[in-house]
Image: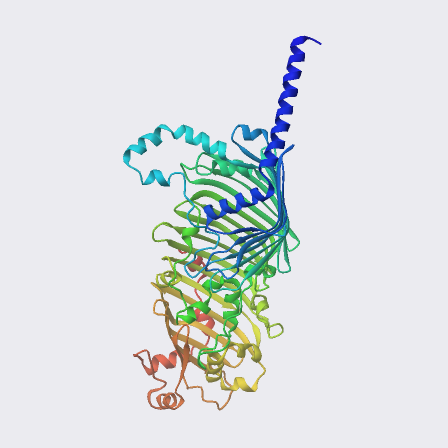
Length: 629
């Protein structure tokens, strides 16, 4: 062996021996007790919270720095309900030695078990995860004189290098048996379980596996994405392309979420995302299930337990349901829609679902939605689905997003039935048939649902074919509609069902005013009914007059000249009935009737009531509605 080589070996051996002696000496200086005290002081100074470690703490230095602790607790915000924000049965991490020489922290693994996390917000919307007085490196600079700005400019490159050096690289994270309890202010607690969460660095990617649950609902995630460390390092500093491809099982039903996003601090994000599933059951997902609307009416005329209310409640976020509006005596809310949460981005979202089960239990087939997003506009050129033998085709756009949005909705549907739509209302066996067709073409503007309703322009039409409606189903409408049905057709009480022959509603709307000029017609086995009047979506006032006409021979001897009016507000509709006055009008004026302060002369009232085919006369051309520019 050559002398130089022996010298190298001796030097290498001496270096290793020195390192071992140094590590041993370091381990005697930094005992677990001292380390625990250092951690408690650091957490208190940085976050203002108390760190408590009740279990044993261990510390190792070779071949990696290894730290573990048991029974770890972190105190909560002073206003929070739970005394601890977080607790861990055990935490263990390993830090690589050599990167420390370059002032980089590389954590090769973190092992967590028994995590319990209590997250909540107060009345101001502050979260307990916001911890006080965490100063940023630039905070002192911001309050210094202008001379320091020049010094900072000179050190910009070195600061960037320091940021890169000080990044913490985590190669692997494993969590088992975790629980997260989340309670927004004034709301119920949502509980989430984490059976397993694994994130492992694999080259330029991070492999992710997770098994989660909320109640009995399970979520399994498996896939990979661009290295999380690289994404965190680059966000807000430099451009990076993020690719992801995940298999997501929701309630045991598999789906795929994949796409890419180009993140650049100098320009809006560019993204393309695709979601595909053979079946997606929203009714099984807790987030889509809300408490029922209040069933106790404030008066006999305001029973909220209606079939329509049930359907709306099941497909609308709880904060947007009529329950909230009713509390403020409004149907349409003035609360701005959460458009500010939309990303400042350009991109596309492509959704393809074989079967989508809505919270109402209605099953839609072949759901396809294509959305294109820019910072100023959302375009949905395609939105289609099938229901039974029927099909819906629609489109929508929202423009001028960052100031006062403009809305446009257009769609048509045919081939489905009223019976299919009412699957969610516990009306099985109470409704049969009812072939339907719908078309609408509407525009508006506004930030809230009330502004949108107030500015609505366009027209819509819906038709219903032959159907059988059980009296028990019609009684689900609540006090108002029971009173209305009984007033229009007193003979209804003597029958277990109503045979609907047809119903047509053509509804033109201008600046939020829906005008009904004999454009709602209903034909049953006993009656022909025509409606006139208006619904003002701005003031939310209803003024609709019902003109029933008995069919010869079916209700012989029954006087139906008692004209009925539905009035009041959308939240509290009322039925106006004046049989004595109506009969008097019929005898003296030939069915004259006063409604909304406007006199309807006898000849016109009689003409309305004697329309032989209300459905046919109310019907408008479908092309006129859907193809209207």
